[in-house]
Length: 150
Image 1 (cartoon, one colour):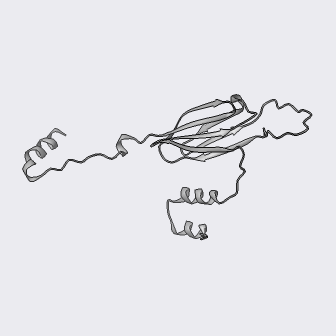
Image 2 (image 1 turned 90 degrees about the horizontal axis):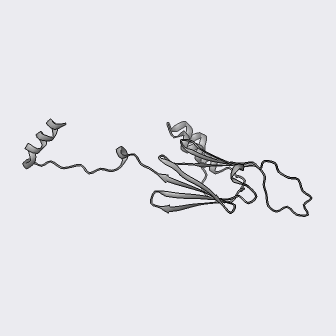
């Protein structure tokens, strides 16, 4: 496996800070709670599903920022019981998902202990590919009409 020296890359690159931070953060071992799936449901649509047994919708906060989606959970009014075995974890958590450009949170639903967050990529019209008409020698009159109209 090849390893990269990120400080060396940082010295020789300009403007790639966010990308290098993502690579650096990906190498740090993180807690796997709560379990989640990321699924592509369409060409520009994704769904994040998180298993949150023991939590209720009012125990969960979802915050969408420009390039990140944060999901936090904190059980309010946790009852201390006399457990013989407690296998369902209701500990506080914070899970952050880095989002690419133009990703928007469409909606979030909570059903049967499963939180589903639907994300959609909405590319602005100005950034979408567009067809450029080709003006040939025989179309010179059309070219001057188009430039005068603009």
